[in-house]
Image (cartoon, rainbow, N blue to C red; front, top):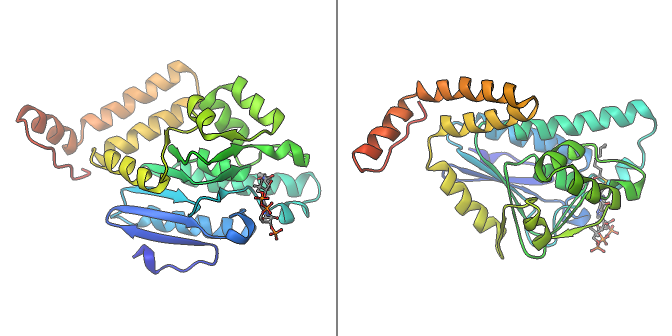
Length: 263
Ligand code: CO8
């Protein structure tokens, strides 16, 4: 069981088919140091291998911070092109593992989601924020640029104009503005509870279809519209060959609830 795994800087809980990963380094507002990144990978891999998990929520616990960025103490010791590039690639790989999970992932953002913290939230499919949340990519204030995927994922999510404004000013965006620009999907006083509700709405659907939707969007965004449409048609074909497709359509026609088996 996932609950039995032990970490220094995070906790992993399982409630039925829902896994909840909580970053727990409050003394540094959950900043991602090297150890936390390693634990994050271990936790994500464990969740990926747990057959019974249908969705993952990532949160910071409480209302002070989701994650206030990469650990600036560790960052400050980076020296030179090679070390910087390797550190960026290492963090990008962590975010890629999360973005590639075959089931829905939701970031529940209670407070600050800055720098690497916002990049972690951007690697999730959906973001739920508390009205107190503050989101930003302030790397330029430190003489850096986002390095865990932020320049690419933020631009794709909210468009290059709004993303450039956020990244060039380094300013923090409040929850309302984040909602308006599509940076977060939902506002809720209790983002974890809302994230659970959204996860339930998602996981009652056919699991293979969910994974194929994610794959179509992820792979499609990497290429042209024509390439994306090819990918969509291929994956639609795979969905149309599943038992769950037969079940979903049969259930609709029989006016009963579908019972999906993930086959
Ligand atoms: N790293 C390390 N420690 C942090 C961080 C951080 N990112 N953020 C906060 N802390 C620590 C503080 O130093 C402080 O520690 P202490 O109590 O020992 O002094 C503690 O957390 C509490 O923080 P504050 O006292 O500052 O709390 P406030 O409520 O006054 O302020 C803020 C909250 C506004 C969030 C403030 O802490 C802040 O600005 N934090 C830094 C935010 C930031 O710049 N984040 C981006 C970092 S850069 C980044 O993420 C790059 C990612 C890509 C890297 C790719 C290559 C590695």
